[in-house]
Image (tube, rainbow, N blue to C red; front, top):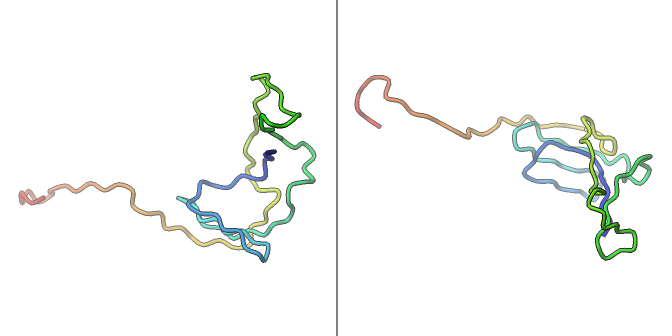
Length: 103
């Protein structure tokens, strides 16, 4: 197996790839996005590749762990539309402000 770095998106709940060449990304806390594939990533001038142990290209040197910096803007995807995400309530605290003794 060969793994190639493609693009960076915000942490998400779901990614759907459609036959029409679009990608829908349901984000956790940011806006959801509908992206169009501009490229398949094969034309990257500096590809970052990682090889499995079962290939001839695998090097056992532990210093050769692939490293990359996430991109701020996708290069292979084009944002076509976005849906506002009204992020869910993750935490709530209730207090007895009127000192009624209710909980």
